[in-house]
Length: 313
Image (cartoon, rainbow, N blue to C red; front, side, top):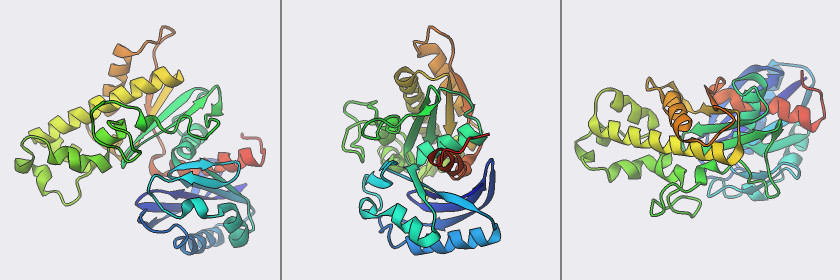
């Protein structure tokens, strides 16, 4: 069985074809989440058709990951928090039927990434929490072997919006001091600009200040970058601790491009949780996500398989 896969992010869209544990091909398309999703669908359709032609065979569906709250049963985007303003009005299952004559399975992007890691990566287990560190802080949960969604489809995927600072920065969600508002790429410019000594730091010369740049200059001894990096890691550690207390996992899987840094982020998170968590049953295991930016695409396969009630091997 093959499936087509789409992963909609805030800055790019990934398209691919997946067969079981194998990503046959992936193509990335630049995207700006301030624009309309409907205007991007023709390019997605063209890209997916070209991929399918290069990998012929029977396709069972289109797995579609979206960076917001979704109703997977109805195939509708519920809320995008300012991204792709028309997304809630689009009939994505209807688009897939018209474009490919295939059913579409819709899921939150981090949940789909967790499905990918659970099926083909680092998240093997029945009770798993995933954190992705990047533009925001994405989270997803598998509890007792089942993907956690909740009555209103918010369960498990809003861990980045737990409060860490009561009088902290205003978050895009409307709350103050969320983990995401204090330690993510989208918050980093504001955090850094207000940091003592920022103007004399190498960070001030960065055209695009993101986590990669932050860790780069911290590794090279820039003291402002080191201070902000250490603050980010402390906040991520507190986030991991909150997720452990909230969802009772055996395993925490951490993803995002920043995990390629030479700094031992995973070990810092593990040590904090080991020291602070109330887990009388034992220690939580920590692993780095194995699939990188391909995780959500690979998650399309189990998503379609579950929708079609196909037995996973």
